Length: 404
Image (cartoon, rainbow, N blue to C red; front, side):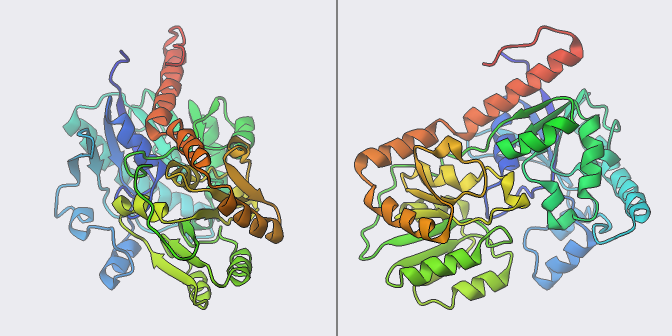
C-alpha cells in the first residue's frame, strides 16, 4: 500500500460553488487515502465588496476577515476528510499593467498567504508536504521554496496565455514557474504539446466524471419534442453564432442551457427565442437528472487558442447518462471518436444533431455509459497519484514505481 502523503493544494478554483471543478474533484479523491490541505481561492478586497453588493455569493466575509477560524475540516460525501484554509484578503493586482508594481504587490500577497499556510501546516502537523499549485503560477512563484515542500507540482488545466483574468501577467509567470516545478500535470493533448518544451517533466491526466452525481440509471422523462441541452458556463468559449443558427433551424425543438452565466449578453441573446430555456446554475446533485432529460448534449465551443487546450468535463458527464454528444472540433477529441459526433461547420453541426437523435439505440446508450465508467475521477486520481509517486522516487533516488 502506498504511503500516506501530506498534500498542500494551492487552489485557484473555489471549493464551494455550483459547477464542477477538476481540482476539487481530484483533491476529494486524493483525500480518501492521503491528508489534503486545500488552500481555497484567494479572495481579494474587491471580492468582499462584491459580496456585500450581492455580486459574489461564495465568499464568507467573517472567515476571510478571520472572525471565524480560517482552517476547518470538512467531511465529504464518501466519508473522507479534507482540510480547507481560507486566506486573508489579497490586494487585487491583476488589473495592473506595470510589471514592476504587479510583482511587488504579488510578493506582498504571497507573504500574506505564506504566513497563513505555514500556520495551518503547523496546526495539522504537516512537514515537507507535496505542494500542488492549481493554475495560479503567479502565486506559485511568490511561494517558491517557502513552504518546506518535498516537491512542487503545477496542475495546468487551461491555456493561461488566453485567460482574460490574468492576461497581463499570466503567461510571463507561467513560463518562469514551469522551469521551477518538479512536475507539470496537464489535462489535455493540446496542453501537453504547449507545456512539454518549457518544463523538465510533463505528464497528462485527463478530466474525469463523478459517477455518484451522474448515475446512468436515472430514468428519462417522456417528452413531446426533443430537448437539446448544454451543461456549462455561458462564457467567452461559447459560439453564440453557431447556437443561434441551430436554434433557428429547429424552432419546434426545446433548447436548455444550464450553468453559470458569465456573460449576461449571451443569456439575453438566447432568451430572445421562445424555444429556449436558460436555467442558470443548479445544485450539483440535480445535474444528473437534468442531463438525463437531454436528448442530445452540446459542446458548442469556438475553435481558438483558449479552447485548444480544453478537455471538457461535460463530455463524460453527458456520456455517463447515455446522452449522445455533439461537439465542434475545438480541440483534439480523438478519444471520443466512437461515442461522439463532431461538426466542423454550422451545417455539419446541425446534421450531427439530427444523426445523434436517430442513432440512440439501447446499444448506443450502453456504449456511452460504459465509456464514461472508465473515465471516473477515481481512476483519474489514481493516475495522478502514480505521477506523484514517480516524481518523489526520482527526487529520493529510489526505484521508480510502476503504474498501479
